Length: 498
Figure (tube, rainbow, N blue to C red):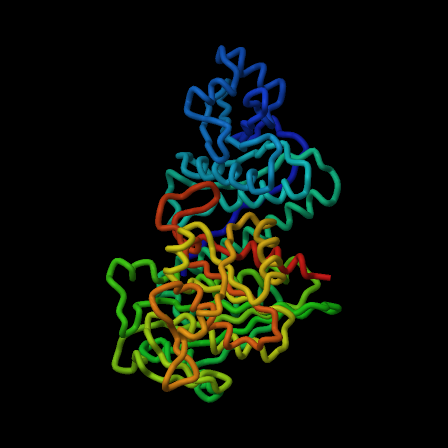
């Protein structure tokens, strides 16, 4: 199973005499661009030796104050400095997250005989900025694939901050725990489907639960059939690798709010009998990104010791074509008794999620949030870097949007219009699984809403676009699995903890 481990990150009030590779910023001001984080002594010696100031030299080499634009400079005495654009001088946590990620990613690819040591000097004092810079630096280290001897990666990171209060270390600890959770989700998403399938994914979740002191329960295919999980069993019925349902629970003493997280875990999606085109199938090992996100997030929430009850559910199945596959026009009896006419076997995610939403709702949580790589329609609407948010009410939507803003993730609220319901009417069952070709992401949300009690606050996150990056790496985002929504879920738990 694919794995990547993050380097250690620590705080310091000043750079050491041997800082490794020093990262400084270039910021925009009304009076022009200025350097951030470069000591006066080093600036003077560099200017004297090079005959130009560091900012001018960086611009000559293609650098700029544009957020995330990074260049490498060779300074006197063998010193190496990366100058990275941080954007406007009135920085946000997300600006520093992107700047730090871009700088570290550049360094990660440099040839060396041993792992790089990095000193990050971006004038971070506020806790939110320390957290943003720390997260970005750690996430920028991530590499999908085996280590190469000529590119040994990152060995350690030191973050310079003038803040000597305990809040500084707390912010960096939060960054480290959050980044580790994102990396866990990335590792799962990037693992090939012949290695990560329902049973092995469930066992990996068990191991995570043990390390995080979470309680765990796993339903195998026999238990799922016995208890009436008709959706999960139908979707997983075409594969020799039988489905699983995983429940991780965190219940700290004194918690007053119960958050339930439900994740889609299709470990490989061929489309079933509605077979996908070959090119569309190649990245379908990533169709379990929602399950990866909720499992990773609850692990981080437990490690942070947040006073909030959280339950994470992962519906795991492999959608394969075979003689035992479920068919278009089949009528499925879901967990809880609602019947569904299957319109399209490639709309399998909502089927496994429906079963799980009913089960999760039986615990009477205060808020249910489901996360799924659900529809290509959401990608058509919002592109590859913005996730869709659909909620039962605006108050719930605002909670998610506020958490996403804190986390630096892009979500856009979409409606669940009144006309979405009639599109799901069936003559042979309580509902159909899909509507017509228009507004596919919206009708998917309307379908899922039928499986959550009306009195329960509920939100649906469609992360189909940002969960997997098929293009080039950028900022702190790698090629491959991104860990989308993990940071937002952790921020949401922080906001609701008492």
